[in-house]
Length: 282
Ligand SMILES: Nc1ncnc2c1ncn2[C@@H]1O[C@H](COP(=O)(O)OP(=O)(O)O)[C@@H](O)[C@H]1O
Ligand SMILES: CC(C)(COP(=O)(O)O)[C@@H](O)C(=O)NCCC(=O)O
Image 1: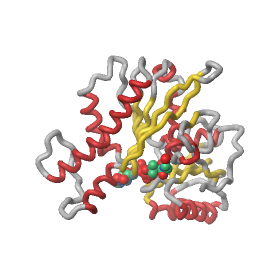
Image 2: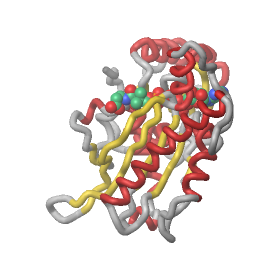
Image 3: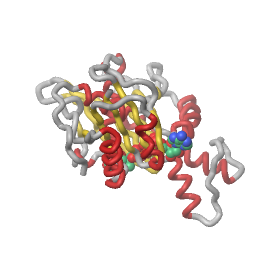
């Protein structure tokens, strides 16, 4: 088995795939950072290779390397925004500075877009990841000087994630609680006021990107893909918002991806010309 690890700032997502298979297996495990030392005990196989991405810092990288060495005597093949450029163009001013999870998530998304008629017809595509931070990244076709077209990451937003927004309000004020409520149209208590404000900020940002993508790539309405642990907190807000906007007859509902980052790693694991392993991340 090939073990795939996506270390985020709050949780570490883990999946596996049989060598040579196109898709990883069942829904990923999601562990807190504190649960990581118990990783090997949760798996009923010995991995042959380990691919990982990390945006949670050097201590996380060292911990993962130690855990994998101790359990299986295996090094980790680290991946980040320096990989996969044969599949996707990166418009970031400093491409390697793009978060590893954002880039690998887009590589993973590309696999889901293969053969999608709207994407093939020129629709831009937004990947909304509601994690510790929320990232809203857009893919679109770019015409090359030789007249061919290539899929490109054209840019994206970073904002505090829903849980982080809630924590910052409670930590940065004297009187606000750590709110748990559900979003409503006209909140009449503090919990609902906070929950609704956060959901509005998250989904407002997504609708902004959708509007900008539709304007930049007219013709076929943008496709929306959503992922991340805080999706349940904002899901209803997006449903309501989309009900009240007119995206045109061809618009499709948002599609959920349980872990595009792991899909991106699975895609790199499959590449026959894969030669980038054993590099340590920055
Ligand atoms: N099992 C869980 N229990 C409670 N909250 C969870 C759980 N899994 C995810 N979350 C929520 O999802 C967020 C983390 O999402 P995730 O996509 O894993 O982020 P990251 O990749 O930044 O670690 C947390 O802020 C938390 O609110
Ligand atoms: C934006 C992020 C913090 C998101 O991390 P996450 O919420 O998934 O843990 C991460 O992708 C990151 O550290 N990015 C580097 C900066 C950039 O992408 O421009």
